[in-house]
Image 1 (cartoon, rainbow, N blue to C red):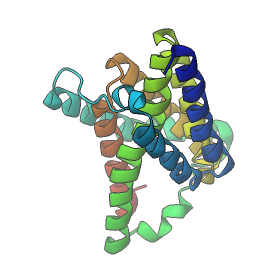
Image 2 (image 1 turned 45 degrees about the horizontal axis):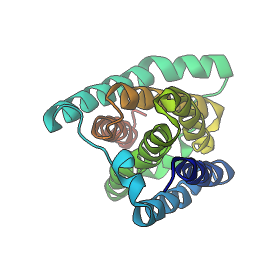
Image 3 (image 1 turned 60 degrees about the vertical axis):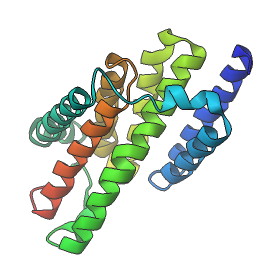
Length: 210
């Protein structure tokens, strides 16, 4: 595949990721995952930039990610989300998770979804495919613009949480995008961060603290 053709195909992939996510907040991410999955199966040149995992070493990648995930989970809960709510005049709407509170089976199902789909698939989609392959196809100088664009769309996929939720998850998406770029476009730190953040957040909801 020529460089020009790769840019065209990559641009179509990014559109195929963003459009379902924007048009169908929440459920659209499943279509985006399917688009990326097909690209990884059919386009061999997409696999290396999308699935590059390890930064420095596996332990370093995981420990860094877990630290970022824990700090953001606590920091957002205690400081960022209340500030956003004060500015917008509405709290982050977590009513979609009401059935998780105090319900162990629902908690375990939601935790699994948060770890597997949120922690792994969303990172492959929004960081690996969009920023990773995007910057490989269009040039490394595009990594930060793609990180910002990806964070905006990532936030909008959480529109079911209201505008406060969109802003909060958009900021989280920007942190994950920055982590990805600063770790030489390697996914494992982002996966560990996202999984840790989701695990803490979902557990807080289960315990009635979220």
